[in-house]
Image (cartoon, rainbow, N blue to C red; front, side, top):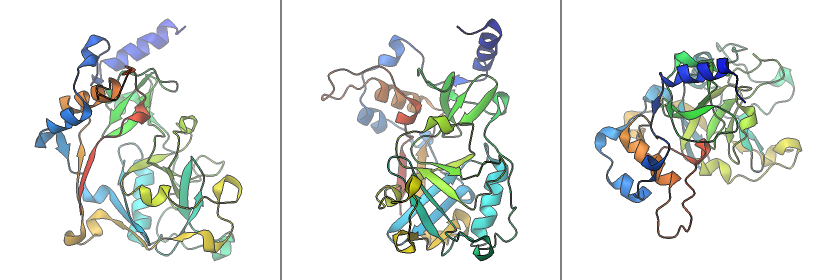
Length: 302
Protein backbone atom coordinates (compact mmCIF):
# COMPACT_ATOMS: atom_id res chain seq x y z
CA UNK A 1 0.00 0.00 0.00
CA UNK A 2 1.33 3.47 -0.91
CA UNK A 3 2.35 5.80 1.92
CA UNK A 4 0.43 9.04 2.44
CA UNK A 5 3.45 11.09 1.35
CA UNK A 6 3.82 9.08 -1.84
CA UNK A 7 0.13 9.50 -2.56
CA UNK A 8 0.38 13.23 -1.97
CA UNK A 9 3.26 13.46 -4.42
CA UNK A 10 1.34 11.62 -7.11
CA UNK A 11 -1.81 13.65 -6.53
CA UNK A 12 0.18 16.85 -6.70
CA UNK A 13 1.63 15.83 -10.04
CA UNK A 14 -1.82 15.19 -11.43
CA UNK A 15 -2.52 18.90 -11.24
CA UNK A 16 0.18 19.42 -13.89
CA UNK A 17 -0.96 16.59 -16.12
CA UNK A 18 -3.52 16.70 -18.88
CA UNK A 19 -5.56 13.52 -18.88
CA UNK A 20 -6.42 12.43 -22.40
CA UNK A 21 -8.50 9.56 -21.03
CA UNK A 22 -10.71 9.45 -17.95
CA UNK A 23 -11.51 6.16 -16.27
CA UNK A 24 -14.91 4.57 -16.43
CA UNK A 25 -17.74 4.69 -18.88
CA UNK A 26 -16.42 7.81 -20.62
CA UNK A 27 -13.73 5.61 -22.14
CA UNK A 28 -16.13 3.22 -23.78
CA UNK A 29 -17.11 5.32 -26.80
CA UNK A 30 -18.06 3.07 -29.67
CA UNK A 31 -15.95 4.52 -32.46
CA UNK A 32 -13.52 2.29 -34.31
CA UNK A 33 -9.97 3.47 -34.95
CA UNK A 34 -10.80 3.98 -38.63
CA UNK A 35 -13.77 6.17 -37.71
CA UNK A 36 -11.65 8.22 -35.30
CA UNK A 37 -8.94 8.77 -37.89
CA UNK A 38 -11.50 9.78 -40.52
CA UNK A 39 -12.64 12.60 -38.22
CA UNK A 40 -9.15 13.97 -37.46
CA UNK A 41 -8.73 17.60 -38.53
CA UNK A 42 -5.60 19.18 -40.07
CA UNK A 43 -4.86 21.02 -36.80
CA UNK A 44 -4.57 17.68 -34.98
CA UNK A 45 -1.37 16.91 -36.87
CA UNK A 46 2.11 18.31 -36.26
CA UNK A 47 5.14 18.52 -38.51
CA UNK A 48 8.37 17.61 -36.67
CA UNK A 49 11.21 20.11 -36.79
CA UNK A 50 13.65 19.11 -39.58
CA UNK A 51 16.52 19.85 -37.18
CA UNK A 52 15.22 17.11 -34.89
CA UNK A 53 14.99 14.47 -37.61
CA UNK A 54 17.70 12.01 -38.64
CA UNK A 55 17.59 10.30 -42.03
CA UNK A 56 19.48 7.01 -41.92
CA UNK A 57 20.29 5.70 -45.39
CA UNK A 58 20.88 1.95 -45.56
CA UNK A 59 21.44 -0.11 -48.71
CA UNK A 60 17.87 -1.43 -48.45
CA UNK A 61 16.10 1.82 -47.62
CA UNK A 62 15.71 4.81 -45.30
CA UNK A 63 14.96 4.99 -41.57
CA UNK A 64 13.71 8.32 -40.16
CA UNK A 65 14.09 9.12 -36.46
CA UNK A 66 12.71 12.02 -34.43
CA UNK A 67 14.93 13.19 -31.57
CA UNK A 68 13.72 14.16 -28.08
CA UNK A 69 15.86 17.11 -26.95
CA UNK A 70 13.34 17.92 -24.22
CA UNK A 71 14.33 14.74 -22.39
CA UNK A 72 17.99 14.34 -23.39
CA UNK A 73 19.36 17.75 -24.47
CA UNK A 74 23.05 16.97 -23.90
CA UNK A 75 22.99 13.58 -25.58
CA UNK A 76 20.91 14.89 -28.50
CA UNK A 77 23.32 17.81 -28.98
CA UNK A 78 26.29 15.43 -29.04
CA UNK A 79 24.50 13.11 -31.45
CA UNK A 80 23.72 16.00 -33.77
CA UNK A 81 27.42 16.90 -33.80
CA UNK A 82 28.35 13.33 -34.73
CA UNK A 83 25.78 13.26 -37.54
CA UNK A 84 26.70 16.68 -38.94
CA UNK A 85 30.40 15.71 -38.95
CA UNK A 86 29.56 12.49 -40.86
CA UNK A 87 30.79 10.21 -38.10
CA UNK A 88 28.38 7.38 -38.95
CA UNK A 89 28.91 7.33 -42.72
CA UNK A 90 30.50 4.00 -43.64
CA UNK A 91 30.10 2.44 -40.19
CA UNK A 92 27.76 -0.51 -39.70
CA UNK A 93 24.86 -2.15 -37.95
CA UNK A 94 26.71 -4.44 -35.56
CA UNK A 95 23.90 -6.19 -33.68
CA UNK A 96 20.44 -7.61 -34.27
CA UNK A 97 19.11 -9.45 -31.25
CA UNK A 98 15.86 -11.34 -31.75
CA UNK A 99 12.85 -9.72 -30.07
CA UNK A 100 15.04 -7.02 -28.55
CA UNK A 101 17.24 -4.43 -30.29
CA UNK A 102 19.22 -3.45 -33.37
CA UNK A 103 22.41 -1.53 -32.65
CA UNK A 104 24.90 0.36 -34.79
CA UNK A 105 28.24 2.11 -34.40
CA UNK A 106 31.94 1.55 -35.05
CA UNK A 107 32.64 -2.18 -35.51
CA UNK A 108 36.36 -1.71 -34.71
CA UNK A 109 37.18 -3.52 -31.47
CA UNK A 110 40.68 -2.04 -31.25
CA UNK A 111 40.48 1.49 -29.83
CA UNK A 112 43.51 2.50 -31.87
CA UNK A 113 41.60 1.66 -35.04
CA UNK A 114 38.34 3.27 -33.94
CA UNK A 115 37.08 6.26 -35.87
CA UNK A 116 37.59 9.70 -34.34
CA UNK A 117 34.45 11.30 -32.95
CA UNK A 118 35.68 14.69 -34.11
CA UNK A 119 34.50 17.65 -32.06
CA UNK A 120 31.82 15.64 -30.23
CA UNK A 121 32.28 15.04 -26.51
CA UNK A 122 33.81 11.72 -25.49
CA UNK A 123 31.19 11.38 -22.75
CA UNK A 124 27.72 12.76 -22.20
CA UNK A 125 25.93 13.03 -18.88
CA UNK A 126 23.33 10.36 -18.23
CA UNK A 127 19.86 11.75 -18.91
CA UNK A 128 17.69 8.94 -17.65
CA UNK A 129 14.89 11.12 -16.27
CA UNK A 130 13.70 14.67 -15.55
CA UNK A 131 12.14 16.23 -12.50
CA UNK A 132 8.40 15.70 -12.87
CA UNK A 133 7.69 19.43 -13.07
CA UNK A 134 10.04 19.82 -16.04
CA UNK A 135 7.62 18.24 -18.48
CA UNK A 136 3.89 17.81 -18.99
CA UNK A 137 2.49 14.36 -19.61
CA UNK A 138 -0.79 13.77 -21.41
CA UNK A 139 -1.72 10.73 -19.35
CA UNK A 140 -3.63 7.63 -20.36
CA UNK A 141 -5.62 5.26 -18.16
CA UNK A 142 -3.34 2.25 -17.78
CA UNK A 143 -2.38 -0.18 -15.04
CA UNK A 144 1.32 0.10 -15.70
CA UNK A 145 3.81 -2.17 -13.96
CA UNK A 146 6.73 0.26 -14.19
CA UNK A 147 5.28 3.70 -13.54
CA UNK A 148 2.49 5.26 -11.49
CA UNK A 149 1.52 7.45 -14.44
CA UNK A 150 2.08 6.85 -18.16
CA UNK A 151 1.21 8.89 -21.22
CA UNK A 152 2.86 11.07 -23.82
CA UNK A 153 5.16 14.08 -23.54
CA UNK A 154 6.09 16.00 -26.68
CA UNK A 155 4.72 13.03 -28.63
CA UNK A 156 6.96 10.44 -26.94
CA UNK A 157 5.81 7.66 -24.57
CA UNK A 158 6.66 8.60 -21.01
CA UNK A 159 6.22 7.49 -17.40
CA UNK A 160 6.37 9.16 -14.01
CA UNK A 161 6.46 8.28 -10.33
CA UNK A 162 5.36 11.72 -9.21
CA UNK A 163 8.90 12.98 -8.64
CA UNK A 164 10.61 12.00 -11.91
CA UNK A 165 9.48 11.65 -15.51
CA UNK A 166 11.19 9.54 -18.17
CA UNK A 167 10.81 8.14 -21.67
CA UNK A 168 9.72 4.51 -21.86
CA UNK A 169 11.35 1.66 -23.77
CA UNK A 170 8.58 1.03 -26.29
CA UNK A 171 8.95 -0.42 -29.79
CA UNK A 172 10.89 1.93 -32.04
CA UNK A 173 12.52 4.00 -29.31
CA UNK A 174 16.13 5.07 -29.90
CA UNK A 175 18.62 4.70 -27.05
CA UNK A 176 22.21 5.74 -26.38
CA UNK A 177 24.34 2.66 -25.73
CA UNK A 178 26.60 2.81 -22.67
CA UNK A 179 28.96 0.71 -20.57
CA UNK A 180 28.85 0.31 -16.81
CA UNK A 181 29.71 3.95 -16.14
CA UNK A 182 26.66 6.20 -16.17
CA UNK A 183 28.24 8.82 -18.46
CA UNK A 184 29.96 6.37 -20.81
CA UNK A 185 27.44 6.88 -23.62
CA UNK A 186 28.04 9.67 -26.12
CA UNK A 187 25.75 8.84 -29.04
CA UNK A 188 28.43 7.13 -31.13
CA UNK A 189 26.58 3.84 -30.67
CA UNK A 190 22.80 3.77 -30.79
CA UNK A 191 20.13 1.11 -30.55
CA UNK A 192 16.47 0.81 -31.54
CA UNK A 193 13.90 -1.37 -29.77
CA UNK A 194 12.77 -3.89 -32.37
CA UNK A 195 10.93 -6.41 -30.20
CA UNK A 196 9.05 -6.59 -26.92
CA UNK A 197 9.15 -3.50 -24.73
CA UNK A 198 12.11 -3.97 -22.31
CA UNK A 199 10.73 -1.57 -19.73
CA UNK A 200 13.24 -2.76 -17.13
CA UNK A 201 15.70 -0.53 -19.01
CA UNK A 202 13.67 2.59 -18.17
CA UNK A 203 15.70 5.08 -16.10
CA UNK A 204 18.87 3.06 -16.76
CA UNK A 205 19.74 4.20 -20.28
CA UNK A 206 19.28 7.54 -22.02
CA UNK A 207 16.52 7.46 -24.61
CA UNK A 208 17.03 10.09 -27.30
CA UNK A 209 14.11 9.66 -29.70
CA UNK A 210 12.13 7.16 -31.74
CA UNK A 211 11.82 5.79 -35.25
CA UNK A 212 8.86 7.35 -37.03
CA UNK A 213 9.29 5.73 -40.45
CA UNK A 214 11.18 2.81 -41.98
CA UNK A 215 11.60 0.60 -38.92
CA UNK A 216 11.01 -2.40 -41.18
CA UNK A 217 14.49 -1.75 -42.57
CA UNK A 218 15.81 -2.74 -39.13
CA UNK A 219 13.38 -5.41 -37.94
CA UNK A 220 13.94 -7.57 -41.03
CA UNK A 221 17.73 -7.78 -40.63
CA UNK A 222 19.26 -11.21 -40.12
CA UNK A 223 19.76 -11.97 -36.44
CA UNK A 224 23.29 -11.93 -35.10
CA UNK A 225 24.73 -15.29 -34.12
CA UNK A 226 27.05 -14.03 -31.39
CA UNK A 227 26.21 -13.30 -27.75
CA UNK A 228 23.40 -10.72 -27.39
CA UNK A 229 22.86 -10.81 -31.13
CA UNK A 230 26.16 -9.21 -32.14
CA UNK A 231 27.41 -10.12 -35.60
CA UNK A 232 30.54 -12.25 -35.56
CA UNK A 233 31.88 -11.32 -38.99
CA UNK A 234 32.00 -8.16 -41.08
CA UNK A 235 30.09 -9.96 -43.82
CA UNK A 236 27.06 -10.21 -41.54
CA UNK A 237 26.98 -6.49 -40.79
CA UNK A 238 24.86 -4.01 -42.73
CA UNK A 239 26.86 -0.98 -43.87
CA UNK A 240 25.52 2.49 -43.10
CA UNK A 241 25.51 4.65 -46.20
CA UNK A 242 24.87 7.87 -44.30
CA UNK A 243 23.12 9.65 -41.45
CA UNK A 244 21.90 13.20 -42.08
CA UNK A 245 20.05 15.73 -39.99
CA UNK A 246 16.77 16.70 -41.61
CA UNK A 247 17.77 20.34 -42.04
CA UNK A 248 20.93 19.21 -43.87
CA UNK A 249 18.88 17.29 -46.42
CA UNK A 250 18.10 19.16 -49.64
CA UNK A 251 14.58 20.61 -49.56
CA UNK A 252 13.46 18.48 -52.49
CA UNK A 253 14.64 15.32 -50.71
CA UNK A 254 13.00 16.00 -47.35
CA UNK A 255 9.96 13.89 -46.58
CA UNK A 256 6.63 15.50 -45.77
CA UNK A 257 5.99 13.98 -42.33
CA UNK A 258 3.04 14.58 -40.04
CA UNK A 259 2.48 13.01 -36.61
CA UNK A 260 -0.81 13.00 -34.73
CA UNK A 261 -0.46 15.37 -31.77
CA UNK A 262 -0.79 13.62 -28.43
CA UNK A 263 -2.27 16.58 -26.53
CA UNK A 264 -5.57 16.76 -28.43
CA UNK A 265 -9.13 15.45 -28.13
CA UNK A 266 -8.52 13.58 -31.37
CA UNK A 267 -5.69 11.62 -29.79
CA UNK A 268 -7.83 10.96 -26.72
CA UNK A 269 -10.42 9.42 -29.04
CA UNK A 270 -7.68 7.44 -30.76
CA UNK A 271 -6.56 6.00 -27.41
CA UNK A 272 -10.17 5.11 -26.54
CA UNK A 273 -10.58 3.32 -29.85
CA UNK A 274 -7.47 1.24 -29.14
CA UNK A 275 -8.57 0.52 -25.57
CA UNK A 276 -12.15 -0.50 -26.41
CA UNK A 277 -11.96 -2.30 -29.75
CA UNK A 278 -15.28 -1.94 -31.53
CA UNK A 279 -14.26 -3.47 -34.85
CA UNK A 280 -16.61 -6.31 -35.78
CA UNK A 281 -13.89 -8.96 -35.42
CA UNK A 282 -13.39 -8.38 -31.64
CA UNK A 283 -15.39 -10.53 -29.24
CA UNK A 284 -14.06 -8.88 -26.05
CA UNK A 285 -12.86 -5.25 -26.34
CA UNK A 286 -10.72 -5.69 -23.18
CA UNK A 287 -11.01 -2.11 -21.94
CA UNK A 288 -7.35 -1.88 -20.97
CA UNK A 289 -4.20 -0.79 -22.76
CA UNK A 290 -0.45 -0.54 -22.23
CA UNK A 291 1.56 2.56 -23.06
CA UNK A 292 3.64 0.57 -25.55
CA UNK A 293 0.51 -0.56 -27.41
CA UNK A 294 -0.12 3.01 -28.53
CA UNK A 295 1.86 4.43 -31.44
CA UNK A 296 0.90 7.97 -32.50
CA UNK A 297 -0.11 7.72 -36.17
CA UNK A 298 2.37 9.04 -38.73
CA UNK A 299 1.68 10.24 -42.29
CA UNK A 300 4.58 10.30 -44.72
CA UNK A 301 4.82 11.63 -48.26
CA UNK A 302 8.22 11.04 -49.86
